[in-house]
Length: 190
Image (cartoon, rainbow, N blue to C red):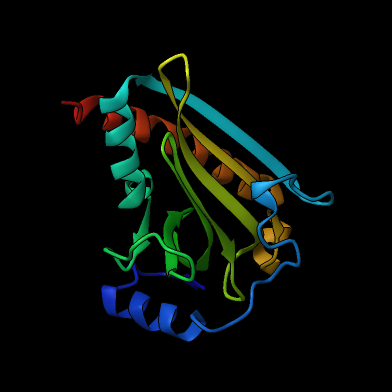
């Protein structure tokens, strides 16, 4: 959904409600937990956040609260939705003088002693088609990493027509999200 004005919290809530029970727009649901499928753009981005348990705890807390989306030009709406399978949210983004809302639903979660993450998949009213996984890992060498793995292809006609710009925005999101998590992990340690 493209808009000329910023969608209000009420707009976003109505939008999410209209998408909540709709099917995913791609057949390969859960594929970011294994091998991403052929026929999509594959993006894999990773950054070391630091070392140790405190960094890991901070990063996991940020991920649980969708703070890796607090980028100024991208946010999750509505706020406060728990990261759990079936949770539906809108990615609210501002680019090129317009606003968009794109519907996503959490496909799976990873809750292990030294790994936490989740993936969401696209719903019918999303500008792309595919899935994205966000993961925090505390490795045996004590380093903590934030990892984003996505597969996607344009769905909305405007996005298909402007595919190079859309790819640029996807890459900008990944860079901004990696940097955001690095900052959050560093600023919120014990």
